[in-house]
Image 1: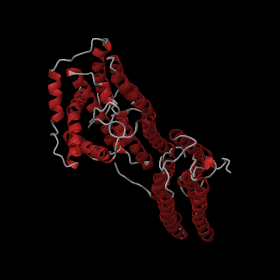
Image 2 (image 1 turned 60 degrees about the vertical axis):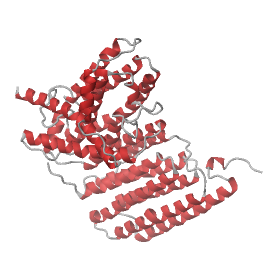
Image 3 (image 1 turned 90 degrees about the vertical axis):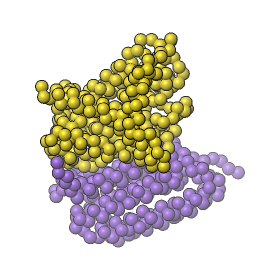
Image 4 (image 1 turned 90 degrees about the horizontal axis):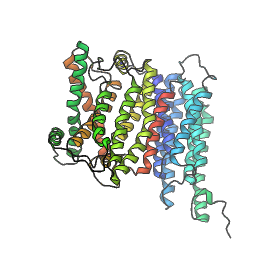
Length: 222
Length: 305
């Protein structure tokens, strides 16, 4: 019995871990737990990107990985935490689809993503690693979209959007060796500013509706 | 002939070790809490004391109450005889595979639930209903984990899986990690341990396993306790044999020692989890089991590409 974990397996593992944290978000009952899982997911993503550097020998990815870690792993969770602390409300995530069904639907999403990517994409150099990472990235995108649809609170919808973003970056890393650096930096600041603006919007929703429950947005008011 | 002797020896060692592991986990928990705690040998003393006493059966009970403890014990021993402890020559390795193993184990769960219903006390029925909910939700996860290993090694026979796990290198460690996590959750659920059920308390609102055997006494209680100790060790043995296929030599005595070391390695996380987590609300249990199912599926699906 000899243990040989290769680099490609480690890349797969970190990507799959990031997918698992995305699924865990759909099962989280509380906002602060969702933010913590988002942090863990972003860190797993940045480790995946960092390991892809040794896979592709494309050193621009190091910068992307570090930026992911800084912005998505530290800065955005910090901002989100600030927002949750200021809006003193019950911390429960109100679901449209309950938590057990959410996780079950996410499992179907994962199987579906693996199915649709199974025949489309073959890289000549590796033994299907990046194909798996692409499938995982696609799953994370779908899970993010599902999270945006299935929850009532605005804050967790933002987390769903950020999850979707992580999925896109993972997909880009697996197919085209990462986006060009300029584009990537642009995307990062876009996401960061987007998160801050969403936070400001949440304050406004809170001011006018006295709740961040988006299902109440259509209620009539004088 | 030699194989049969080895098979019987494995069962004997398994049964002899089971109460000690229960005592060991309890001891770690109490020591970490700063208490002294009973010795590791306490479960043996309890069992001997209970075996000497005669059982008292409610007058409303039917024949189920008389046969259920024996069926439970036999089902647990039979499923234990599928599992390699320190040698692949198990007693039942010629027949039956992972699926047979799981359904024989399911038989014991079913008869404990029947026993709970049969005595006519309200707590028993409540415990049975909860136990069946948890068991039915935990089963797909366990199947998925076992399918992953069947795919990996190309066989569903546990002994062959054991042999191949100790000779091959890891092909897909990712599946191993996710399956191990899923197996951890499932074994906590199946053995009625802390995030799912608290084995130490008899609080009527929360108990699951204890509620079913509340009416049991004397010998029958001893049999139920012994079966539950064995079931815990069964799951630990699966984990230690499949997920930790190191430390294997041709020397039989050395293998027994390695087995005990592996079992101790796998019982420490159980004690640590029980210390750090409170029991979950009953309606959150499906979420937790569904997450473990997601983990198992994730491990399984990574074979697809």
